[in-house]
Length: 232
Ligand code: SAM
Image (cartoon, rainbow, N blue to C red; front, side):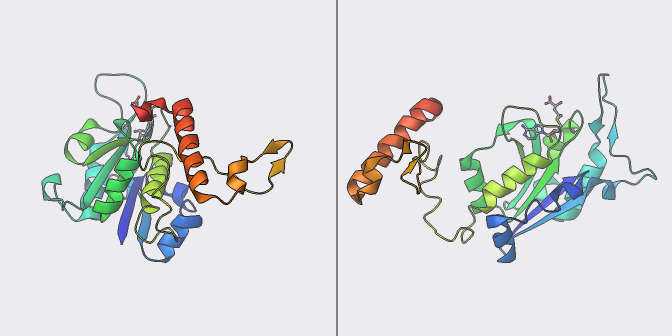
């Protein structure tokens, strides 16, 4: 069972986020457990303050380190990063992190038993969280979100569908985009003609050898067109 603990100032954001499709079924089958925790739970002051102004000046607010450290300590049961088991991954979601890929999703799905996800807000999170608490600083892409919550949903979705047993058909992830070098091949379904748009003839022939050849070529062309960087 993979345990995913999300630390956030908006736990309500996740109320239904994992209640659909593959992730819902994986939860029901006991493959994964997801819990969102309110960061304010680990504050000790009357007003449950989680942020403060940045040292050195500048716009906006920064999430303070103390409640985040306390939250991770409670959720993992470890007092410091040096003690974490190799299956414990503490992920700081940040546009400054390394970019999330299918390979990293594979790594997490195969090697983690607990993933703690720290969702930033405002101007971000005190740097000491990345320096001394997180095992991974991860960005879901080269753009800036207003908070880490959508990134947490993206990461959990990509990891959970790779857990053994999460997809009905074990081969379904093997030929997907990014699993080898390029993108998946194009898919068509009925009708064979729609608004003058037709399905490639070869797919209707039942000739598996020809179909496999066409798919390899079409996947390559699509990768060249949309993601030539994957072929380098
Ligand atoms: N000042 C920061 C910067 O320019 O690098 C941006 C902070 S952003 C507005 C607030 C929070 O959203 C971040 O702390 C992070 O948790 C989350 N976030 C924003 N973009 C993200 C991305 N591409 N991947 C993962 N998390 C992201």
